[in-house]
Amino acid sequence: VQLQASGGGLAQPGGSLKLSCAASGTIFSGNTVAWYRQAPGKQRELVARITSVYSTLYADSVKGRFTISRDNAKKTVYMQMNSLKPEDTAVYYCNLLPGNYWGKGTQVTVSS
Image 1 (cartoon, rainbow, N blue to C red):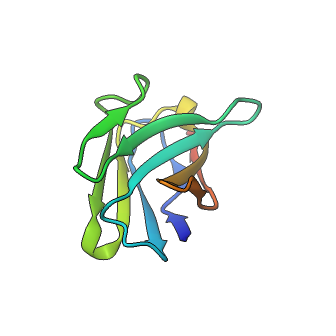
Image 2: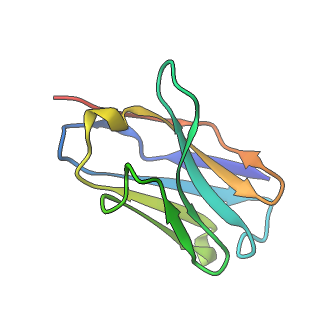
Image 3: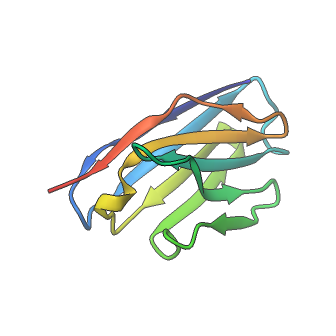
């Protein structure tokens, strides 16, 4: 299984970015996929998760601002990030279960 995260970059406070996590080597439709992030000097934390039946879960810090979605035909999970804040700056990783597979991270920087 391989996961390829993309879509990171530099955004201004209040701006938006959309992350993508493309999977290969798995059927995908039966997997739970999550986004985690890790800021410098901090532990990796769960940001959002979507199950095979499209049930979603969000960290309190991103509720109402981030939206996770999936396209099983493309084997891709997305995370739309709106109203970005400087504290959203981190490396974002996607994770696939079962199996606990991780992709390489994508850097998100929110700064004016």
